[in-house]
Amino acid sequence: MPTRTARTAWNGTLEEGSGQVELSSSKVGTYEVSFPKRAADEAGGTTSPEELIAAAHSSCFAMQLSALIAQAGGTPESLEVSADVSLGPDSANGGFKLTGIALTVRGEVSGLDAAGFEKAAQDAKAGCPVSKALTGVDITLDAALVS
Image (tube, rainbow, N blue to C red):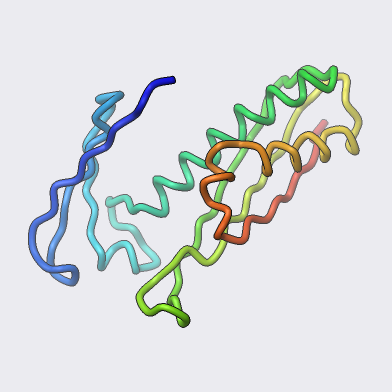
């Protein structure tokens, strides 16, 4: 299996510095990062580690769920997945930590009922490689079929 690479160039202090994160393997872009904007409610045109984790988690979960739906005898017509990754203070160790990830999926699926879809979604939450990497973070799931 391949290894994927990202690279970050950072200049300055945490509070006043900024950087650029490059998605090196895919070459799809270079994005601005900054701690003040990372900690703010409005991102102001920059990304953050949390947003990149959210992108990784939502896409990984969607792929895993589509495979599990098919294994259960269903056909995934469409899946809409979002991941909300929260950053907060780490009172036990100082600094910050990921305080939670909320996965939400709405699916149009033929061949599975709501219970079958929920089981596949819960199994995808447990089994996708990004979920496995983030076992130290509380991950919740809201899964529902749409018609």
